[in-house]
Image (tube, rainbow, N blue to C red):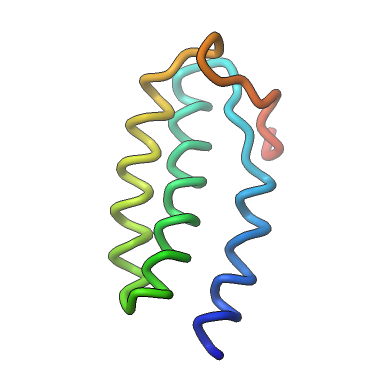
Length: 79
């Protein structure tokens, strides 16, 4: 049950993220999306901290390397 609460808290965070136009914005939001998804997956598999770290690193790298021509979800919600 505790794992489900953890996932229920993290999933709305995915909806707050947007890609942005600069590489920095895209890296930050990609890292946020990756960390939230990784933590949710890690919670289901037993290690949310490791999942968040791995997802954050991968998401940040991918977000920083993509261009707005590839994926554009609008302005970041945090700006």
